[in-house]
Length: 202
Image (cartoon, rainbow, N blue to C red; front, side):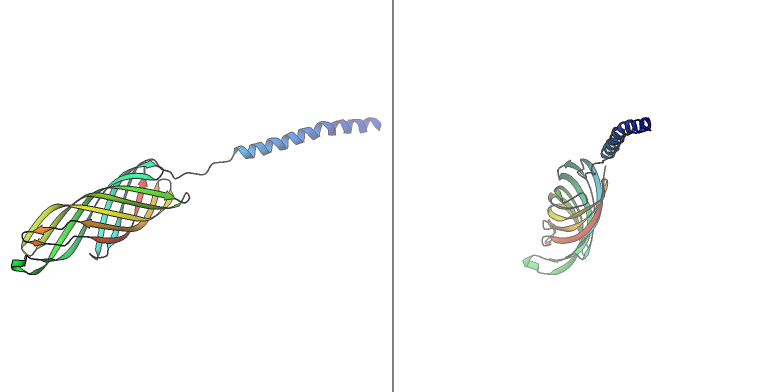
């Protein structure tokens, strides 16, 4: 009987450290499976487009852009679009008269955008751009087209659906220089738009 007790005691002394080591190995294995969170700080090219409702024109401004993200929220992009609106115009003081003009506007602007992310999904953006707009104006039987200086500022919110796809919504203020057709000229074509769009990161 004494031999059996000695054998049992020896077995327990060997098995206990082995069991403790097995527990330590299991814990180490669980720690090694940790995966760091996915970051949305994108660096590289992106392509996007959207639609804004221009309040004064009461019409849609369709736009598209291509740009490069430098990381840490800063990017540059080239944007173009199309907007059609009607403007009240006035003649010269020597022949004062009022007419209605159909105006087609195609702005082309180079823009800077800064984006601040609160987390991996939601963020805010602000930016501004300068460029020129091709303005085609029809007043009665007269047609004319010209390139006019244009500028804009914009701000909004962004939601990252995935690291490569995002949606955004915001407001913009766009300003164009006045347009003249013969002796008739329009006022400055400034407008505020509210819109949304999508963007792909490459």
